Length: 202
Image 1 (cartoon, rainbow, N blue to C red):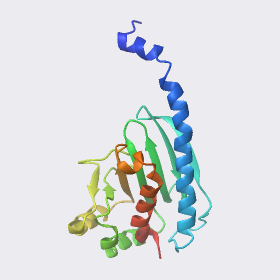
Image 2 (image 1 turned 30 degrees about the vertical axis):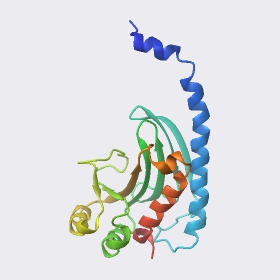
Image 3 (image 1 turned 120 degrees about the vertical axis):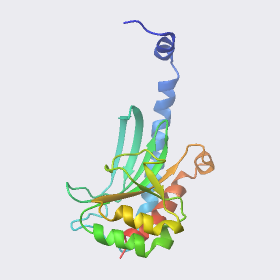
Image 4 (image 1 turned 180 degrees about the vertical axis):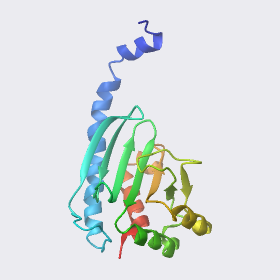
């Protein structure tokens, strides 16, 4: 096995992993901050949640291989079974961006679809995208992957939703966003939650 000059440089790098070890706890603290703000917010709303939903359930996850890149995320609120999903994921994906996403499947899905269309002006034009993949675990954005929800697209969104067994609404935030640089990432998550709440409330 021959190593290239780039391989040798990476193997010899004494700074990257030390920096990564310092940054990961900062990301965890951000996710904890989001969790705390969501807990306060959700007490003021009547969620259209699945049977057996536990409003206190949450999960913090850290991994290394989301398409070969490290990631950390929070699922809160969180409810997953084989056929029913009701969760909001706050994902930090190294090398890509932050994603704040509502994922719903089964259960009250018909009501969620109706709420999105009937309350469309409350969700539209708030930098929210409907994800088009056939998997709720696809995190790419752009043409073919996402459809921006704007006021003029209610019919198009309704057509996309019509026969889907799940849907995901997401906001993708580049790391260059001023709110991230100024330490206000948790506010972006909160804004996204407020934007999608009309879909999942009574």
